Length: 445
Image (tube, rainbow, N blue to C red; front, side, top):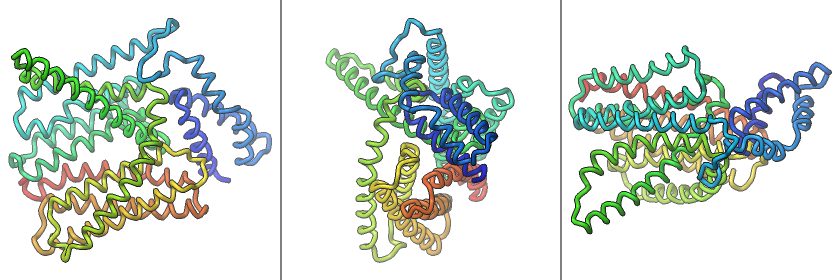
């Protein structure tokens, strides 16, 4: 067994331990260090790599017992039923982090409010992610205690994005401006991922952690948005009965502060909680995977009734691309939430069906786009959509291949995980190409 195979085993063990979310990421790092020390000792004693790994894991004890032990010793870090439980033994670290989070949330809110005040129309749309996401990256840079070198690297993508988005002579509300505005938050989200990983973006484990974080962050952000929407609606209705108009206050202050603050607070909740969304994740994936398959089959039947691919409406092509992105997100979240040591089961077969169905839809979309470009010429939207479909096609093809071999028993689940984490930077690279290269290629129209 080589170094790569041993690393794969350790990654599988870490993934299993980390799903017992009573243990923080920092504690898992410490446990992994102990595991590696034991493996090294056993290797020096003459054991083979796989034997040393198995014996070392056995000597680490029951993961559940370790989880309970860490939960007792570090109870101030646990997230109980979506409410932080105060602890008299709290050293103040939790309170200090809360103050940092609140400060960054207020800073992001003020930046967004300034943007609403001073920026107009499409200019605000271009810069909205630049007004909020640097504060989120700052939170992770503070929490991970990144070095000055990493901090300097984190500034670069935000600075370059700000220069490109504001110096390019976009035609107001033109196609390239809208495209750049859509892809800017995608690119900057990868900068947030670099901060989340503490600068160690080359680590497959850190990338998978960031995928898991993104899914959980989205769940929390959705919950906060729904709760905030209900609260605002009730508040407006109550004031309306008193013949008091508060809509201008809501639009000018509550919404900017609520949106920007929710982005930061949702990230803090993901970091603070220790088992709430993790229990929901498998349920979400098992509910939405079959529903998404049914939706894709319905779309394929509808497309089959279309006589010519060139007649497919442009709006439908855009919506289909959004659906494929949704499928990709569901696939990534499912992989991040799955126990890598579990044997292949029915849901893995269902997951393969989802990937294959999405692959068929992607091929049809590519054919439709190429047909439209051949008949009507290229536009920024068509080129960007075509490129996105090619990027998704490569991922789906190899994901289907690895999923099939995993079900056959000739590949491990770690291979599928590794493929997704290694392919992740491609999406960031594509977003950068769209922002930097596409607008000048079409005269910024």
